Amino acid sequence: MKYIILIVMFVATTFAATAQHVVDTTNWNSLYDAAKSCIDKSDYFTASRYLELAARIRQSDTLKRKLAVCYFNRGYYKKCSRLCLEVLEPDTLESDLMLLTKSLAKSADNADSLLFFQKKLFIKNPLNQNNTLAYAQSLLDHVGVKAAADCLQKYYEIDSMNLSINAMRGKVFFMAEDYEKAIEEFEKLIIAGSLHPTNFYYLGVSYRKINDFENAVRNLEVANSLTQEPNATILTQLGIAQLKIDSIAYKGSETLKEAIDAMQPNPQSLKVVYYNLASYYENRNWRKSLEYLLKIKELDGMDASLSYKISICYQNLKNQPKEIEYLTKFLDLSDDSIACSYARRRIQHLKSEQFMNGIN
Image (tube, rainbow, N blue to C red; front, side, top):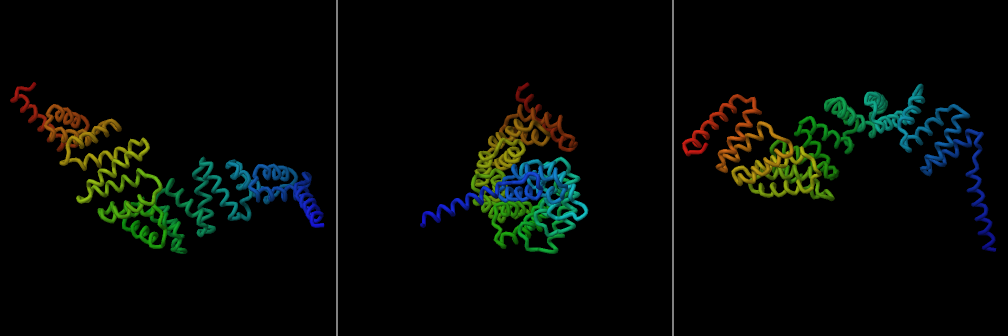
């Protein structure tokens, strides 16, 4: 008897499951219900087919909204945007605006439209966190730091305890070079338990910018310890801060060498590291300092400042021909009349010495 009951239950369940897949393709309601079931299972391909059939039978904003969701999830962002625009008026639902801004951001071909609708949604509901963060980022990218700061401030006046918004505020303060405010913001984030390495990184660099190197090193060491793999950016900032503290300056040179090992080939990043290492070795090891300056020359070519620094290395290494060579390059590249006057006098002095010593 027990087995008979189980068989009956199995047949009934199978029949019910089969019945659910029977879709009347001439009835838009049936197609719509089937599409919703597919969306619940993240089957956006089948759902979009049902909704496209339904849309041929009946014009409905409800169908368009569901179809827009399918297009977005399948990567058809322009189709999604077009449908969202069709249903915006007259009611302009927040969900339509949100999907539209997300699809415009993904298609990345109309920054003005993206900003327009992000602003529209922000005015409608500034507490829509996802839109506020995206709108602030768009303002940073296309308008400026002040506009992004104003946007985030309006949210902050309503809710000052949102850690995601406050992290963005901290970054905006940092980008505006208001390092005192950035420090205040990131300190509060960390106290509140937001222990992401990015927060420690921005806090550490902000301290470095105001020449508080002890706090810079302390926070950048935490940022470094929290990362899973060596991070060239964090290591670079940590190394630069360590170089500024005499007792651990040697650690800074080692940290910067770690940064080079962790760095993807990036001439600008390497240039920063090489400059700092060259400065560290000045008066310690002129040959090492020269080595890093010549690496910069290989990466980025010659400029006035670099040629002058190289000439100083050769001066301390007692290599007069090379010192003259790079001072001459400096004269070709520099428009600083005072520095050029010194360089000419130095070249003349060196040539006089060479003549007195019988060197042509």
